[in-house]
Image (cartoon, rainbow, N blue to C red; front, side, top):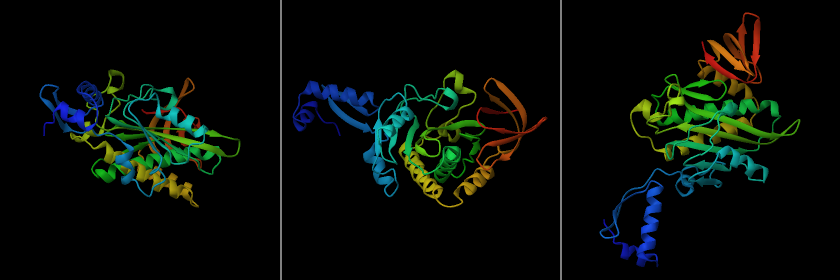
Length: 308
């Protein structure tokens, strides 16, 4: 249906020039509006925006349902979430962005955040645990991502790369960045950042060799709203289990079971300017990666793990 600018102006008690300005603003946000002032306007399609009004009913009953914050453009959802957490933002606060101008990955790497193509999200959590166990929470987030995406499409067969990547057909489809503020013996708050490549058709040259998206793998467009809702529900399930007795043992067992990287993988680990080579030999009881080298078994606390 085509509606004249005059009619719209009357409905919103404004002017035709203001209607034109608002139409241009909507187009800039990805709303497909056909027409111009002389002929009238027609709404052809709504963009797949991660708006709280759309997501909240889909995640009702989770710790995230009442605290969703949406941004069309932001520097970094993790940076914003860390600032909000320091100022007292409640547990379950979610930051979602259509675009990041300074998206961050682990180890100060940049995260490419094309507008309205992926999920760029960060959640504030306040778990009761010592700082040494935050890695297990990060591994649990990886399990949650895998479960959410395979629930939507069981044919994906995702892999978990220690400690923070979800891999599809050998390429990175999701990265997880966990940051915290803590005292010596307890965590004050944790921010878990999750970036999922959903509908990207291409990537910048520096990422093209090692990145993929759900769309590139399946050949079809995905609903980002559906992905975001599934992610938050899956995260909620994992986090509720995290508080239970023996949860850590379950998480480490399931991560090792669902990851081809944890045991028997020939790897090179780059950490603090040096590197080691060996074969992965499981996780220790804190979630750190064990690698058998020519000099014996080494515990990898951080760094970049690559297949040899």
